[in-house]
Image 1: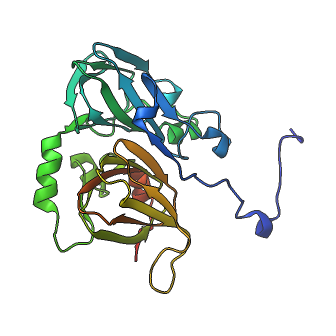
Image 2: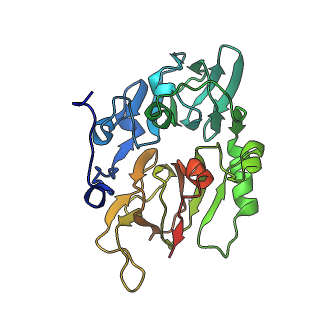
Length: 298
């Protein structure tokens, strides 16, 4: 026991230096068939897969008339699961009982499940962007067993209709937050108690001003026809004019995800004449509940 335990002096160790969440990109066109997890667990010094400390992102790609079957093991040991259908049609079966039909640009969210089956029902490839909070649950050494919200489909039509209905043309940010009755009761108004989802429109010749927050964003570019002129700038500081100093520039590409680390300033830019759309998924639900999200708008 004496070899296992440690003690540290307070002032020089209270703020340990941890490896930072990386700014990386991954395109769905670069993955093989099956489930391709985006894993950086060596950065966080954990054994379970993790894209960020709390979230695990992946792409699911299926040829016509094929399926994947998974159980609630380590990689899917989550309380919240989100599936965005990039293209194709398919069915998602939970626990061999509940079946949900999904198609291009739908979002399906699910709480805990014992088993899941995803099948391509169409004549073309099915591709899904999938995120869960298994790294958070696994970090706590827990197994999920209770449902905290209902499995739900946010259809393409629901999303687009509400984007038109709710977006304020006078606002700098043209987007909608997706929510449900269960998270409204808690007060966080997020898509699950852990996950936060914004469907964000970036109109032509627009700069969405720098902002930052303590959550990590796993951003999926839903649509971009002009990658050269649509991009996100990410950096640590702002200058006296409110611009990001020495930013990293991430160009938007359709069906490509990128990670925006926590506490960094970031702004979205469209210097062209086409519309672009992005879907950030964050662990902001749990941070809102803990009262530590810390959104700062410039």
